[in-house]
Image 1: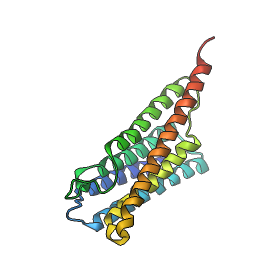
Image 2 (image 1 turned 180 degrees about the vertical axis):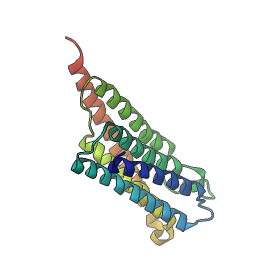
Image 3 (image 1 turned 135 degrees about the vertical axis):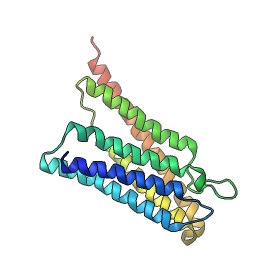
Length: 200
């Protein structure tokens, strides 16, 4: 249980608190402080994701436990965030979800994570490396920016006024597009690996 792994476990704890805050929020009550705290926790959790990886490489403390737990915690945090942002606590009086997130978008985000996890496990069981790609890293960065940004915009939408909705829509759509491209790239990459491993 080295320092990088401790940080990863701490990030899981932050994710739980983050989920509790989002669950307690109600758009009708419009408690901005709750969303401000939630967005802050998400950002801290995202920063620790960079920190634990850096420390593991710098100190030579990369472990099998860390390689499994780190991406798992990332997926829990991101998928949990988008699932909760789809929830009834973000629906206004007219029945509109103010985050601009739709159910099919969350299916794409969560489905991509499940698919890539399965592909990675299968290919690495064959002894084939299946680390994160450039598109995978872009996807994580986009999701890590979009989630807290949407939360903060919802918390203070009166500041942006009419610009609030198109900004949220742009963030959501860009996230979905980057996620879909990443999924397609992993599928293509996995196909090549499987072709190479198929006996002639």
